[in-house]
Length: 292
Ligand code: SF4
Image (cartoon, rainbow, N blue to C red; front, top):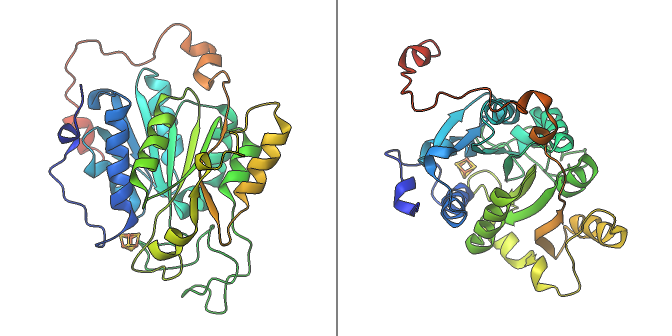
């Protein structure tokens, strides 16, 4: 039985004090425990960005990859050994900017990966530029006159692209976020969880105060039902709620579907996992040195 202390690493996070990434880190750990996962059978893959340091701070297998590329790497891990639980993490710039193509194709494939997007509506690591989820009019050093583009809406994107577990969380609501991630880890298929993650240093608009006054849990609204395939009324309502970004902003599970995964459909996996070292202890030191 995995406990929180089993997931502690020797590294201390270098995030700014108060960064929303701390809440996401805690929720990921809590969800691994709640889902009953073994650290030895769990892999976290990230891209590049502040939040992409997460694999260093959760004691599972982990890999920090290239900017915008956590999903192709996570896909490779999953196909090499489908028995692993694979998570991918990265920021909104990483996932909805550089990695957008990978995201759309991962969703339509329904590969069994949980993807957590640390959505702070800005590029944090590069000191505060407009990102794909920045609201129109956002003023940053890259858009001093205000952003002229419409932001990406992850909920509508996920509904249109085939995600089978589609949720939005908030780094300031830890129990709720933990529950959403645990649900995604237990789900068979591609799960997208967009997480509001206040960047306390560079985003002075989308703050804890901003979200604290606005977010509400979908499950607290008895008129809302989680959308499922064929339930057009509920799907339309999920779209409408996904567009709510004013005085009220919903968090929770928007859509869920049971559909065959990419691994289920891939004939090459019918004969078993491609990588199986059995009980053999493999020394990867030489291999790793080649990448250093
Ligand atoms: Fe977090 Fe922003 Fe600091 Fe990056 S710059 S660690 S996103 S608060």
